[in-house]
Each structure stands twice: as C-alpha cells, then as structure tokens.
Amino acid sequence: MKSFRVAVLKGDGIGPEIVDATLKVLEKVSSLFGVSFEFKEGLIGGSAIDEKGTPLPDETLEICKGSDAVLLGAVGGPKWDNLPTDKRPEKGLLRIRKELDLYANLRPAKVWEPLIDASPLKPEVVRGTDMLVVRELTGDVYYGEPRGIFVEKGKRIGINTMKYTEDEIRRVVRKAFEIAQKRRKKLTSVDKSNVLEVSGLWREIVEEVSGDFPEVELEHLYVDNCAMQIVRRPSTFDVIVTGNIFGDILSDEAGVVVGSLGMLPSASIGDRYALYEPVHGSAPDIAGKGIANPIATILSASMMLKYSFGMDSASELIERAVDKTLKEGYRTPDIYSEGCKKVGTDKMTERIIQNMEAMAR
Image (cartoon, one colour):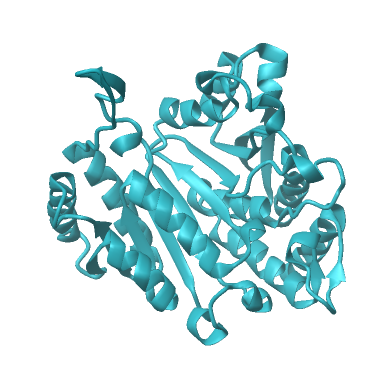
C-alpha cells in the first residue's frame, strides 16, 4: 500500500474547521483507492505566535521538510494586527515559501456551472472558463534588493527592486509548460517587455524553453492587455505564466471573474516540496460557527493528489463529487442563493463524501 506523509497546518480562524473537513475527504480517498496518509500537525500563524512566540516555529518547518506535501488552512486575524510587520502571522507563510523553495504558485480559476450567476460577467462570456495562473513566487519586487525607505537630500524615498535571474525564470516557465502539456496545450506568458528590461529577459527565456515543448501553443501578452483579455475572453485561457507581482494581481482578477472566493484552491510547489491552501483568508468573524465553506480547501487537497501524489483519478473524483453536490443545490452561506439548500461545513463535506462513494462504484 502506498503511503504519503502530509504536514497539517490548520492555522487560525476557520482554518481548523476547513482542514478537519478536508482530512475526512482524504480519509475517504484512502479507503477508495487503497492508499494511506500519515498526518502530522504543526503550528503556524497566530496560533503559533500565541503558543511559541513566532509565526513559524522551527519544529513546524521540520515537520514540513519531513513530509511529502503540506496542507494549510489559513493564517491571520485582527487579534494580531497590531504586531510589528515582521512578527505578524502572515510572515510565517512567507517564510515557509522561502524555506521550502516553493517557486511556483498555481491558482486555478474555474467556473462551476451551478454557480455561473456568481460571476460579475455575463454567463455567455464566462461559461467554460477553466484557467490556471502559474505565478513565480520567490523573486521579483517582493524579494529584490535594495529595498526599503531611505532619506536622500532630506526627502524620503521608497525603493523596491524588480529582479530575476535566468534560472529563476527558466524553472517556473518550464513548470508551466509541463502543466500546459497535460491540459489543453496552450500557454500565455505575461510580461511588460516593451518597458522593463526584466521582462525582456523573461520573454527571451520563455522563447528558449518553448523549443522543448513544440506541441504547446505559446502566446505573449503585455500585463495590461492580459488584464483586459481575462475580462473580455476568460474561457480562451488555459495556463498563464508570469512573474510574482503580475501574477499576484492577475490571479486575484481571475478569481473575481469566476465569482466565488470560497471555491478557489491553490498550490505552491517547488522541485522537492509543495504546499496546498485555499485562496480565502481566515474569516475570524465566522470561526467556530460551523458555516465555513470547505470546498476551496477540499479542492486544494485535490490538487495535492494530482501534483504531489500522481493520483489523477482521485483528484478527478473529488472535483466530480463537488460538481454533483453543487448541482444538487447544496450551498454554504457564502455561495447561497434563493431556492438552494443552505448547509454548514459538516453537511457540505458529508454530501461530497457521499457523492465520491457513489461515483466510485
């Protein structure tokens, strides 16, 4: 029997509830597919600050490095908002990305037909949208040096440096090509090469790597044009690859286009490690009420099965079960509309698991 070690970081707010729900789904995967999961918990974010005085304790990092994948809930909340910036819960997330060298962030933006009216776009425009934004995660202006606020001639100046090495670009672009090859074989590379030298290098590397993937159709778009085209023709995109700051903005835009934040999973992957988490935050206002939407976290686990464990069939089963549950009218409050069945976290999870079991027969 295959066995996989999963580091479980529940985090803050609704994190524990949505992760617990997802672990139940993985337990069902275990019984249906004859694999086993070894779950090991660690602290991160505000809960780690309260207990250990740091948003990412060393023991949590060691648990992650000893695992095949990391499943994360959410971090942060108003309780810790007044802490210095370098001590806040979100710093734990930034550090874990850097320590595990998670250089590629994968953000799917898929329209679920039962929720198509949640999109701010017309159904005929958004129908069929199923794109994946691959964002470089460990470089660009967020990490480039020099950076900071300085005084020059008696005036303050702020500096952030956009910087990429050839190797940083090449590895994330290659990852994006590999993913596109397994999807619909189209890759859109996004840059600002008409203005930025960094983007000029980005485009050169993309063209070089494309020679290894002749079956993947490649298009280049400037970032401002891409932002417009995501709204104008979202269903035409397959995989989008871009740098850290452009990817941060475009992946959020793509998420709004599909309309349901509680449905958005994500993955942050490297050559050795990978971390899976929902896009939404810790939602402290509804924590403990049993009404949090677990689907984004469940779909993040589906991505884990696909990208870390090579269990494509299990990943597909989860997605089909989610789709069927939505078609049956089950909704947590965040995605509820008139005439549907309003349910809480547990009931939504239970119904997804029941559908998994029924569809696996």
